[in-house]
Image (tube, one colour):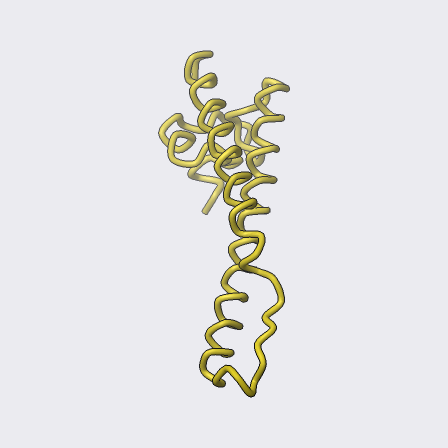
Length: 111
């Protein structure tokens, strides 16, 4: 992997990081506590609202995990440790990193 490949992957990571931050701002209200009056709103509407809330909470959890993975990948780039398997220390193929720039294991070790 050459310096240009790493530069392009770093840009991709930074773009993903920016998109996740924008998504976080737009979804803050989705995971708020569901406050529906049982007398004025039907039981099914309340169940739908609770289900939507749980889905938003799960999406937030995944977003946080992705954010951490991106931050760690960017730190590995800064330390010139990016693109190497954390198990066998072999270089991770470029195709794998293009698909998932946060990958920390080569194909063989990820099984």
